[in-house]
Image 1 (cartoon, helix red, strand yellow):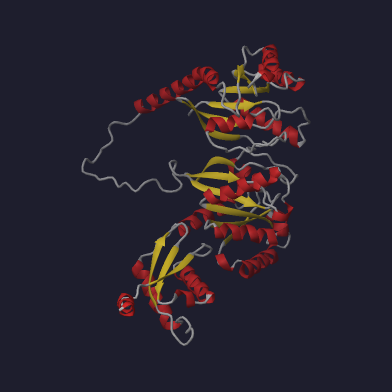
Image 2: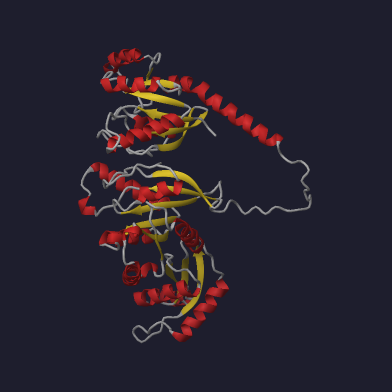
Length: 480
């Protein structure tokens, strides 16, 4: 396991900017507003030839443990305890504040090595704060500008012994594992190994699952219950999650990468720049996911915003599972389930038959059913159907329900094939694709979904006009 380095400091000193600089991507949200980062985020960092895991954390603040700021601080303290080393960031332009001194005392009580970094040290404006940082007692501070990439060579020198020590421990563990191998296992030299590539759910290719929904639907609580720890910040306040946080998890020996996302409100209500960034991050998580779990509040499910989120996921072509959270708050569950099924039948024609799972993220009920549904949805989303089966189905459709005649002429459907999966995309070759009504396209899509058992899967169907073998001759006659 690579070295784990945590970046800590008070709010608005540039921790997320340094995190983005080290991972080489704009993963963490950055804004001038203090306290943007709330959950701790891990990333694969590289600095020269060094490879390590970097943790971005919430700004350390003095607050009561029951408040949101207090819970954020508890998350940061857990990151300090898990890390091999800590990068303590101070603002060189603002100088050393009482908060910096307070958290320096906190770090001195831990055994975790501390690397002191004075950020925003470019130019002469940062020199006084850089000299003040000597008084914190962590040795010579590293003058750094995370925004402009200055001072990274000094940070490299400070991280080198820590990363090398972690790599040495990993090498020793691998050597011990090799020594413990059973060399008496019979091996067939004539056996041929099939190279099919890693399947989804393996360590090399974990299933990417995004958990999305409106604010306060219980997304972070659900993921915490799955992980068995308070990994993500939760609470009664709506809109706690801002960044899309990815965490690795194993369900029944199958590897999953879970993405917790910010709650998506109606577009008209999203006014602040920071919330716009959070929603954009959530939409990006949907695009890169394979399965999307749309989390609905059981006490107010299938509201307009819920339907818009589901429609968005269907347009992106993701495999979809609907999770009805907070089911423990429902008294008459049979009546509520009937209403849910009726609403799904009425509003979700584009993904007819989508799987609906009732659960309680707070109490951990229904979680196995949720991921059984997620892997089943992935299998259907990834399904390929042979051309011969498709055309046998199309022949039956044309016999029982041929396309309507338009302007007295029939539209001839000649051939169907599957162009790709993820989601399933079918192409129908026909004589006049522009004349086919939308209702007949929906009929074909629902027929494909029912015949080949793909309920709830977004299906793409497009038409292609076959070439007229006499068109060239007719054009030649017209020219003559």
